[in-house]
Length: 581
Image (tube, rainbow, N blue to C red; front, side):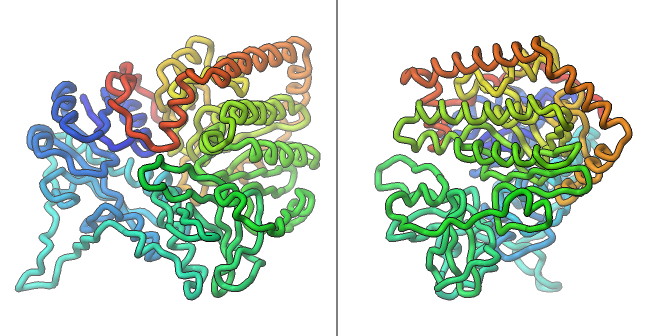
């Protein structure tokens, strides 16, 4: 079919719907809902058989849903209505939830139901849930709704009326308003840790929780329980890798990121590590140390940390979780130190990643934008991530596995490709390209990408700049194994596979052959040429204030609305059916 996706942004869920529907052979295009009458002109241009709205902040115009079949993906079970569905679920501690695909009508979220799929909600942030449990349920529901629509015989089920009937109990319909900052606001003098965490988790990506730190209004993005620190409620206790720990009435929480409130008439500020966002206002605080990798390998579990390490037999697991998947200069350097320490451990297999959610998205555009000299910080960041990728590429005494529990893009995707094997959860989406940010790219992509998919396919992927599903990535050779499992089971599945690999009779032979091949002078020279050429091209862009990269970066981090839907989404290349296992 010809399917048009209408969305407020080409976000993670929209990208996954786009990629998976194209895998099935549908002709899929995207139009962004940018306000005004643009959709009234653009939708008829596509002449769609079906319109799907995976993420929409405003109602579809009547002129569209009366002219075309329109499905809306609502991140809530049947009967749940309102723009803050998942926010309320996280705040109230819901453990069972769902996603509903319904037909667009006058009242939002009230149309007939084409599909509804339940899902569980573990205790984690809203954005993590949205990209994982909610996305899994959404894709199941979308696929079911599309099949039913194609078959032509399905009648969608009407939703119950909101008003209670005179002859029976009130229907299970819950209409809730947009969640405001009054609801999210933290009272540090009375809210227990669990309440604080739920408020932070319900707004971890957007919009954040408005708070006052050291006399400055900031939006807090995300939070983690602190296991050992205590103090007076509201007191700032310590820092760790840019995060700040703040006491609650019965414990403390780590605050990883903060974004200053926008001044009247000013541009939107960027979200930074909380210590950086507070700047000189932050008084000297003790730095809470992390246990060494040796201690962690021996079973010492650190308090919250972005980077962790553990071992199981001859398999080591170096996990990292950076907010939004972005990797700043400091984060790349810390991860490189941890990687080198992990390579000093007596293991035959080292797993990078292996947890739920983002694997990595490359350099940290927010930190770069906020730097006094963005060009210099861009350069420092790309060199730091190149150093990390080089360390993975030149590891010859063990097998390295990149385990992607979630999405990977640009430099994060190339970090994964530097490993000997890439394992990927079935719901992950890969974006192995840089063009949309006006960059040539680095991280040895001119070596690793053609090596895996061939020169022609590497050129196509980087030129088309479209998202790739996990299944298509496997078919192309980007991914070696796709693990079909819920997000909560991914770490255990990876651990089981890694233990089997480390304990196999063939592992020593593979390591020996790898060392022989990788230690060749020819390969060393090829890596040096790739790095030199890539960085030279990147340096030219960074140092040119008129290069599109700077405007594109600024628009991205400050959430500026584009003037129109990018052309590569409105007229993407024809889909190629991907074999399904």
